[in-house]
Amino acid sequence: MMKIKIGSHVSNNGKEMLVGSVNEALKYGENCFMLYLGAPQNTFRKPFNELNAPEFLEILNKNNISKDDVIIHAPYIVNLAQNDPDKHEFAVRFISNELKIMSKIGLKYLVVHPGNHMNQGMDRGLELIAGSFKEILDITAGDDTVILIETMAGKGSECCFEFSQIKKILNIVNSNRLKVCFDTCHTNDAGYDLVNDYEGVINEFDRIIGLDNIKAFHINDSMNERGSHKDRHQNIGFGTIGFDTLIKFIYDERFIDIPKILETPYVKGLKDSYPPYKEEIIAIRNKKFNENLKEEVIEKYENSIN
Image (cartoon, rainbow, N blue to C red):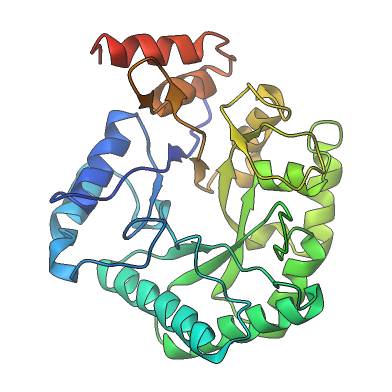
């Protein structure tokens, strides 16, 4: 059977930090995963020596997980399209520091939501984002870290929901350290017809940006109709994109060596909400949609079954 790279967003907190992240990924049966260096809703970061990087790297090596298959995500609240000088400086400095921490650990890829133009207009927003990336890459010159621009849904004044918008930034920055993370939910919500024209969308991306620029995928179903510009993720097979289309991305030979990360929502039970990743990954590896997945997740956690 074709070996796929499949994982999920895992936590990174408490005393274990990075060690807890890799152990959580292993619990779900993952061979790649994504995490934040701190909480995704803020920019607070613990001192480097509290991240437990040496033990983290040892566990990766022991389980044959490449450091390049561990993806870091920047907080959502950082806006690289800021025109305000102080806010712009903060955003550039923060992302630069994230890359420096990653470089110290030995991790390579940082996914970034590029930003919101905030009524400045799309062209101005893209120019500001490109300028921010150039500053960040200059500050971190000499690193082999890579920033991945995430394909966005176009919610509000979000930039980069069209492939041509991402291409404009790539052209301005002109650096091998700036690539792309392809999010299936966002791309659907942006208006691209993944369901009925999978190859057409892939070919359009290739024509405008180039498939070799994709270095990570976020594999998410969508709660919304195509073109809604809403960005609400759904569990694999339970949304408008559907299981079969998402399986195409995961098993496409052109992308087989690229990490595929699930950011699907926790399943809400009677007592709490629970991570669905182990069950989703089993369904993906079996290439068979599990219509009872949510019930199985709830039963497992609420009855304390591993």
